[in-house]
Image (cartoon, rainbow, N blue to C red; front, top):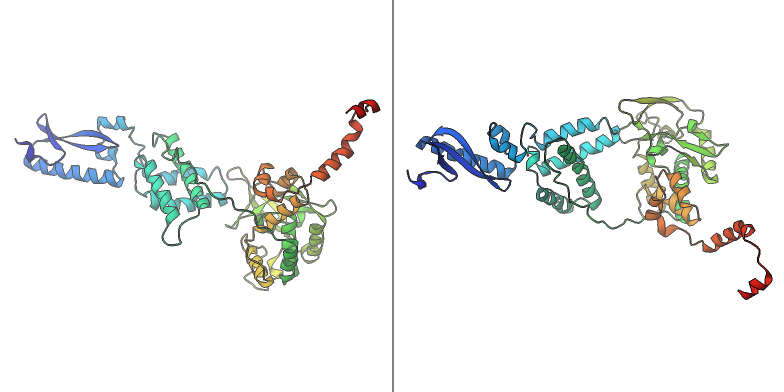
Length: 417
């Protein structure tokens, strides 16, 4: 029988037919176990074409197509070869035991955005580093002005790298295809705090006294907004001048523990704003709220008389007793616009606290503990430009503190120097 009568990739082997194709850069052969007839050659050619197409599309399931093939062990393929979608479902299910609801919501959002880009039904074993680099490029470029920022792209890639590391650790792939892909470099975004004059104009533009108090406390404590709206009078000791950050309110409407539980030492402007706010809400209704703990499935009940009640500002039946985590940003935007100030994101209230404190010469480690950072390194990295040039003050302090420890020297020796 002439060689030309066989379809491409089909050949005779011991009076039966087999096909060959390229998989993961290697030529492999699979014996079909059927007699070498004209009809079977045609069917074998069609099978080989479909296999090659599935490989190009990244949907070829070797174990399903050739379950008894000795080639499976050469490629580390077996029962664990699954699609990207199936992997994501397994990973997210197990992640729920490790992280809070707010974090799992972010992970789910990333997965929803990345699955279509990587290939929902693509086999995990067929995803390559090259594929991922093109995915990253497409996210940056987008269409028109819809490209994602470098920060967002890095976050998406890092999150998915964790999912594929789970695949590598559990035998779904031999190695993580994200290995070797470094985060994109990004320009450092400098803090854009309010000046003191701008802050005065901003507070004057707030129409309701509670709004004035809310942003005064935000700026004079550096609280995150989720911590600010969940602040309760039970957390505050005005006599001692302290506030304990015990919970955070998420965009999902859940109470969780804050990133860092801490005691914030209040400066006088913050105490004054709290005293003013106490006249409006200190004797309000106490609520029992469920706070999700870090241990999976465990919660705690906190008694909370909330410091800020949106019902005081908006008399409406649709307004609840607690600000939503992102709703305070609306009042920030409104006051900025009304005051004629340049627009900034509401998170600048936190940056304003840090920059003002550092400009006044406060210790970076103290600022870090007040803001809930793990170390002062974050403060140095982000706010270094606002650290006061206080060399003369430091020398005066050292002279005062250490002069008594210096050994006395004879006058002759001092002159010789």
